[in-house]
Length: 130
Image 1 (spheres, rainbow, N blue to C red):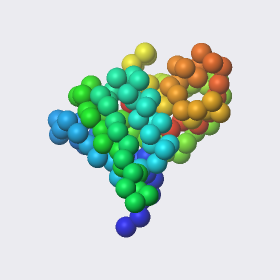
Image 2: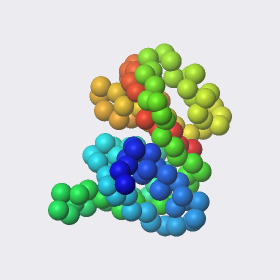
Image 3: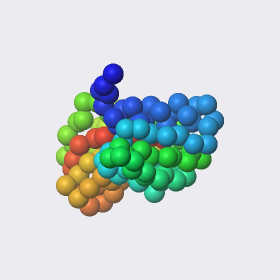
Image 4: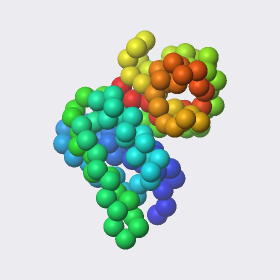
């Protein structure tokens, strides 16, 4: 069975582990791009820690959960957003103003929508979490 989208699969595993009150989750197969999404989640304290392991060319991530995430989902299709267009998607995907974050892939790397606004960057929406 092949994966449709590794980011969707990984975020679903994290969301299900959080719902089951588990402390750890293993994400496999993984990619460096998924690692960037996990880095953003860790910087914003939605996950405790993550470790990348590579065995025989296959990446896996061991994620330590802290129970602070209510939900995390990938955004499909990956909408293109201009630097002034984030508010429309904040209203669509986040529960309230200043609650949660949108993960955005920009020319300067993966970051939150707040950081992209401060830097005046647009990009593609990847995921949201709160």
